[in-house]
Image (cartoon, rainbow, N blue to C red):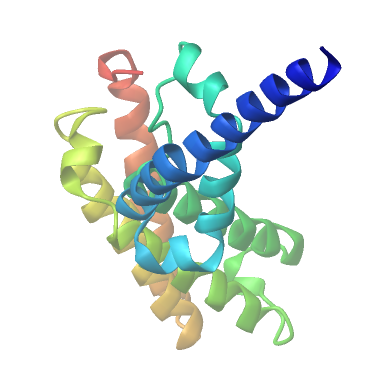
Length: 184
């Protein structure tokens, strides 16, 4: 009788692992690659997706959607905000963007370039979901403002730095005026 239950247990575990590898591992890997791109999937995504396949009952029977990965637009938008925030933290510690010492300037420039690169990858359709005018304001005030500040820092032109900061302020004013219209 002990062998019978042991065989049943072994069979159930074998079936569970087989379903995880044959059905769910390919599905979660495909979904991760489709959502994040092939390169990100190769770098680390295959580990995440394959690990997810081992706990497939949780995703099948929970109310959480199976493909609940952040979209590439979410990632680019968030990465841009993080890089910009880190750049501004450096500037604040230095007393302002125009006051950046030579040893902090390269780090500030790198972060601002990253923020611009990430922001440029955010699709207008993603921004439009927040507010109909957001794609325009994002491009004209945020991305352009960062680009003007970057050029001002690289050329030691305070007027450009101030011009870019002015665009940020215009965006902040617009955001405050339209805050109630944003979908959350």
